[in-house]
Amino acid sequence: MWTHFEPVHAVTYFHPRARAAYEAVGLRGYWRGYFAGRAAPLGLVDAPAVAAAFFTFAPPMVARALPSVWRLVTPEEALRARLTGAVQALAELLYELPQRHLAEAAELLEAAADGVDTAGRVLGAANAALPRGDYPLARLWQAATTLREARGDGHVAALVAAGLDPVEALAWRVAVDQPPRNLLGRDWSEEQWQAAQGRLSERGWLDADGRPTDAGRAGFQAVEDATDHAAARPWLVLGPDRTARLCELLDPLARACHRIIPDDNPIGLRHPRS
Image (cartoon, rainbow, N blue to C red):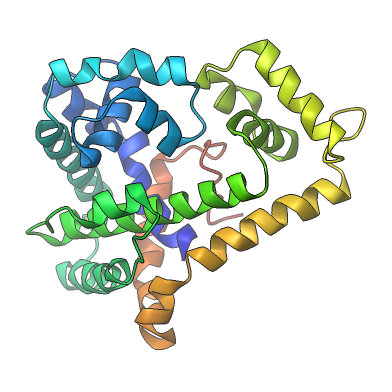
């Protein structure tokens, strides 16, 4: 299900209309819009809390954006900008789909999002508390965002429980399947990267050449399994029949959204043709 709703959310990172909406309210530069928009559900929050919640960004990078972005926009203005940009992006990508298709998908996706257990899930809870949109595309995007942020909260918890810090998690993904350029831009120093790779080698996750070991793959699969387990409740609440119907409805949406999502995106979304 993540592979079907995540592309709907991800237009906010990759579609030019999303960036234009942030720039229209004074948030120039990609990262100002990113940090303001994603952190806005939390209110006037400072850098340490956001660095903790987002997990993979170096604290100095977050501190360059927060709290200074709140001198440019209020959280409410940032929320309006991110929803405006996302809806405009989806409207451009999904214009061929009938309104009844979008409305049914929005209804079922909201029902799934209503099943999120927000306890211990800060970003998921903050997004779940936002008012619902008036139109199907706004409702779709916000429900997808609530589900993905709640799932992300659970993933961070699984990483912490496994004893992985942010740089180790990124270094592992680079060793497995991510181009370095996708993740090196999160402002960790070369020394921190090398130290993280060394720690992964010491725990037996990387071999002497920096390649993943069987033990490492098994260890990280346990993290992925824990993430999936923690994210299962919305689909249990929705039930197998409605979940299958939602999957069917979301499939053309996800495929359309993939048109603007790079194949080597840092989220790890695989193109449907893969």
